[in-house]
Length: 257
Ligand SMILES: Nc1ncnc2c1ncn2[C@@H]1O[C@H](COP(=O)(O)O)[C@@H](OP(=O)(O)O)[C@H]1O
Ligand SMILES: [Mg+2]
Image 1: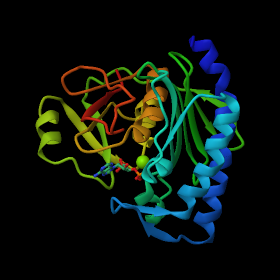
Image 2: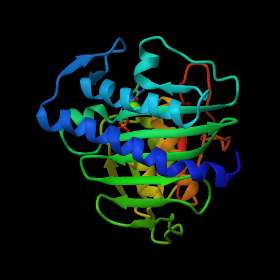
Image 3: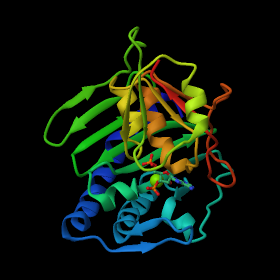
Image 4: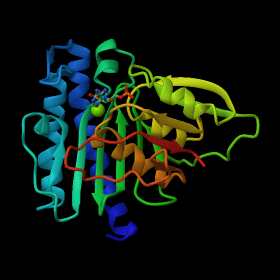
């Protein structure tokens, strides 16, 4: 799919993410019912309700293109993605942030083609921030009630890098070994895929992730970062690709330059 074709889907995908976010906010404002997934991670009714908004809407937008979504996968449903084009959906990334009520949770929708994320929308309903992109030069930041603002990564700062890391999941010694090779000015923490958006907005420079994530955690933020001029690679420089059988990512590093 040419960049222009992916970009033409963006307005609808943004609307879908926004609608899912409003559903999540109802749960957020009314109280949270926490259950436990098979893997022991917390899940809420909000995850399920948001996914129930997103999946049928994507099926309607692109009939026949499979949707790999977090809650359906957890329930054992895995569509056939051998066609090379599929959606990756995390209806509520940053469940721990949702439960701790710090606002750093997001709705994530990405379109993958031949292993690469070609479109991404990341929406943080509690703050009203939405990030979207579909190909180089198309990244925007929208805040509830405002216009779109084009966003771009910043040049690598001479005075040292701002590194962004998970608020809830530590990366351990591998992260420290990696960072020893860089001039680090400051470290900030942030929940969910908003770390990619911090790079895409030019607020941070480096997001190394040495620890488990699933493909739906990263694909939308990855697409936004590419659209803003950044990149995501494995630590050895090979690309981070999507469509792996176990839906799990290897370690990766997101760069804002
Ligand atoms: N042991 C593990 N296995 C798989 N994914 C994990 C994990 N520990 C954390 N994650 C992923 O990290 C995401 C949160 O990232 P962060 O800490 O950067 O906010 C979680 O998303 P969910 O909150 O959607 O479950 C989860 O998918
Ligand atoms: Mg997630």
